[in-house]
Amino acid sequence: MDVADAMRKITPRTKAIVPVHFAGEPVDLTAVHALAKEHKLLVIEDAAHALGARYQNRPIGALSDMTIFSFHPVKQITTGEGGMVTTPREDLAKRLRQFRHHGISMDVNERDQKQQWHYDMTALGFNYRLTDIQCALGITQLKKSERFLKERERVVAAYDSSFRQLPFLAIPPHARSGDRHAWHLYIVRLDTQALKQSRDEVFQHLRAQQIGAHVHYRPIHLHTFYSKQGWKEGDCPQIERTFSRMLTLPCFPAMTPEMVSRVTGAISALPNALIQGGSHAH
Image (cartoon, rainbow, N blue to C red; front, top):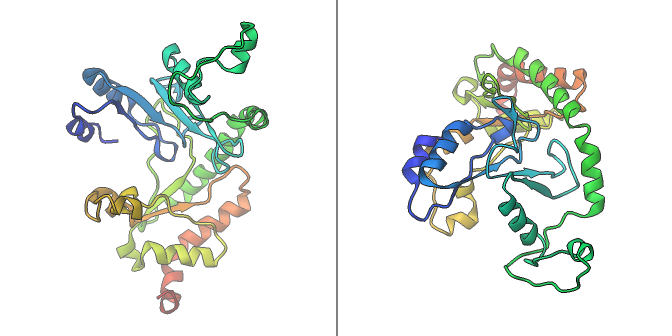
């Protein structure tokens, strides 16, 4: 998040700032918190990518009014689906518990403890409860999360070593001193002019070699739903320019050194491979 740009967008209707720790790299929370304090706003961190990340040697999840994590199957740990919200504020914790439980003021456990049957729906809520089975899986996964992150860091170190000197590719931003990147995604930026191929052509070339490249993410305002609301190409020029060059490379704990070598070899060979296959790529 560009904090200076965020400041220009604050209006009397603004209630919160939602910084995103994209790919697992911690946002500059000091600047975000200062802006939020100045304008009396909540800070709700989108930490879907950032389990295990640290900001100034403090864990993401313990620093803002609320922090939201994802336990989708592709994230650092999984519960199959679902997620978690952390907060240091008891008032928000109470509201969150109520919101996930149909807006009912006391759940069944509280009623049992107080030997009461009476309950009341006092606010709009939904069934957002994670099941006990999912929670058991998540707790088991959480015990492995540090090992999982170290394995991701191993893959990242190998990628960085191979890619840092390549003239047609920029490696991802790394965490600042005192911070820790969670490395949910390893996203490189291609110099498509130097390669004389588009990002999509590079993607297809890698997929043809059985390398699981991906693209994260198509800008939201370009999706059909938002185009119907009046958004159009050119509304967010910075991300549109960057998006056309972004390519996600495989990065997961179970990657063996041989798998990593296949990826680094294929990326390093791109210029020659694309020239040789250029007539087929189009």
